[in-house]
Image (cartoon, rainbow, N blue to C red; front, top):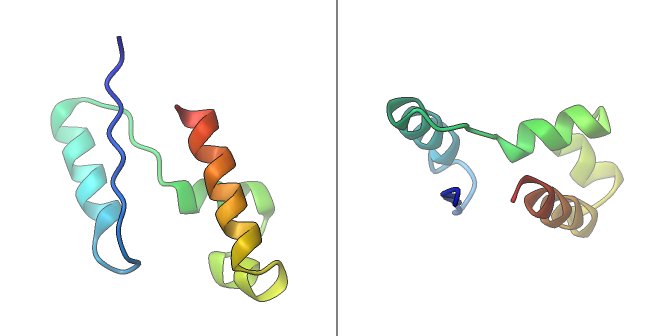
Length: 69
């Protein structure tokens, strides 16, 4: 059985930094969902919000979370 840990919270609170450090110290994989969504869409998060809207971004977040689980 694999262990999956999700770190959630408000933007700008250090989730990515803390998660990456924890994953490295535990020898676990680390995925930054914002970076994956940016890569797959070819847009920055700000561009996504401006052109596609927050609901589109949240849908992509949910889909990606299912894929990574």
